[in-house]
Every structure is written in C-alpha cells, then in structure tokens.
Length: 196
Image: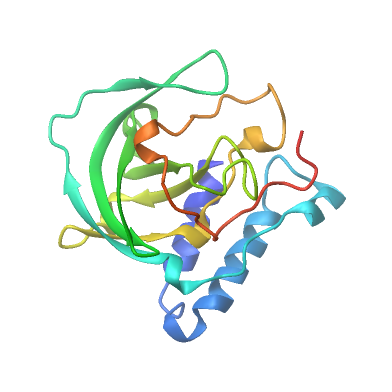
C-alpha cells in the first residue's frame, strides 16, 4: 500500500497541479487511488465514495519537530502493535477551530532506504463512525514537504485503512487520542458502501 500512496502523493504534488486545476487534480488522485487499490477489486470499486473536493481542507500547518522522541507501540486493529515515534506536532486552524495533532514516523519504514522519509498522519474526527470509517483515516506525507517549519495538510487525500474493507485480516494502526479532532473533516474518503 505504501508504494501506491507515495506514487499518488507525488502525482498530486507535481507542477501543473496548481490552484487553477486543483479540483481536477484531486479528482484524478481519487480515480487513480480507486483504480490501483490493492484490496477492493472488480465491480466493488464502484462502491468507493468521497466528499466533494474542497480546497478549504488543504491547510498550511505550523510544524514543530520533536527531537529525541521515543519509539512507542501504537495500538492496532489486530494483536500486533506497530512501532512509531512522534516526529513533530502540527498546529492548524480548521473551521475556525485551532487544532493540535501529532505526525508520526514508522520505525519499520525508517529502517528502509526507500521509505525512511515517509510520515504518517492518522486521525479521527466528528464524521468518524457516521460518514467516515469509525476507526479513523490516514494521510501520507514526506519529510521533504516540511518547509520553513510549515507543512501543507490536504485532508482531501485522507484515505481509509485496509481494515475498513476486510475485517480481521489486516493490522491497521488506530489513531492515538491526541489526533481525535473536535471538528468534522468533510473531505477525503467516506465510509465504504459495502462495509462490514
């Protein structure tokens, strides 16, 4: 899955995907996401649902690096926990509400030459369990996107973990309580129509 989302991230960040055609670029992002999905295949791909693309959910956050952050075991949907550390703290404003959330680095990916720069932003919000998957959604980022202690978070890229589609087969990280947002994020992937 990490190959798919890293490739999609690069596509949506490529020059030519500027303000004027932002909506079209995000629709293309979603179409490629569905086309290349590794769990949902065939006619079931028609069951994917997304909120309408909304540029107000592409937000510049202030970034504060957490130096010497300890690795910890993040709770997952299965019996095996995954090891992460807090890479930094994000501060942003969503719908006139100031939000603070953590962005994480995976120990497993950190030990990979190819993916060591990837960052992980899991979250829940007021849509979780209603319009979106109850156990939360994810956004993938890379360290290189942090510029002058700022990081653009595009919630239109929020996607469901594999556990949203198949129960008991995958071991998906559960967003820590620090990333339970007190606002409704009406952007990104909705709950899968054929959900268990």
